[in-house]
Length: 323
Ligand code: CUA
Image (cartoon, rainbow, N blue to C red; front, side):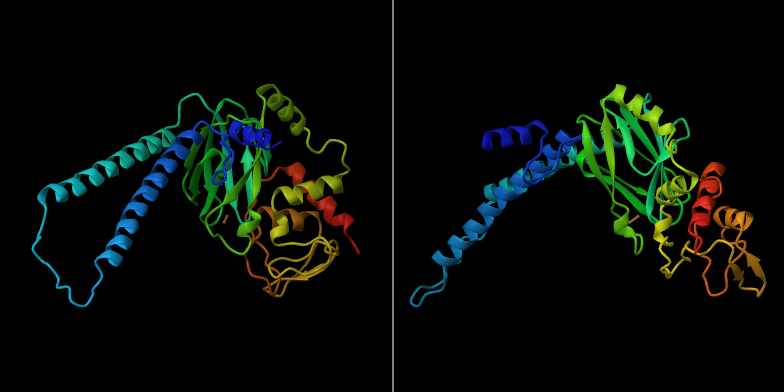
């Protein structure tokens, strides 16, 4: 039993310290980590051990005078300067080599666009389809072109040993080759506001043939659903739950969608507006156009991010939540 467990752990390169080794970078990164770790343990034991021995052995005792006859030892001093310097250079070489490999995106990659926003990830594939979970084929180089819609986020896939900031107004890149099938966590590691911990999702690594199958099926993601059900899926997909509820409870940032349909809202300039299809559409695409009295203009602009079909589903969802 135990040997079966250890062999499973060994298979995926998982250890007490480390998660599964899920990409081609993982063994190298872990190797450098192990090297630095055991080197530190070695010097910790030697330095603290000798210090302890000396403190006890040469402690001050009555009747024994201090002997200051040794001032220095050139050979010893050269030795303890040169050896650590060489070790530091080795660490630099190993780390820099790994860094350069991780930063150099090869030419022929499967390209996925990543958008970080408060508080959800959106992964868009070459065919324009997008998801909140990252799906990738096994054994094929994948590159991520990443940007943010609002503040700085940071995409981290521990199993792949890769991490990169996602910054508004510019594109950052990551790449990897997944080597283990399965699901692994993705985290945001840059504190980005109250929903920071909601930016936990996963990467699903498929066999290449399963990946194509998944892509075909996922393309029809709303098939077999009625429009309101599809709307709920869209609601989750774009992270609307970060600011809106569906159950009638008010959220400090945005209104609940329950009972919203057909309501007369008073705007910040005192005008009244009926919540209908066009108002909802405008509020999604250009949320700052009409601000309801008492609310702050804080909603993400979804223009260019959401498809018309999905807006229609959201409208149907809101209609279905009429009191
Ligand atoms: Cu996004 Cu933390």
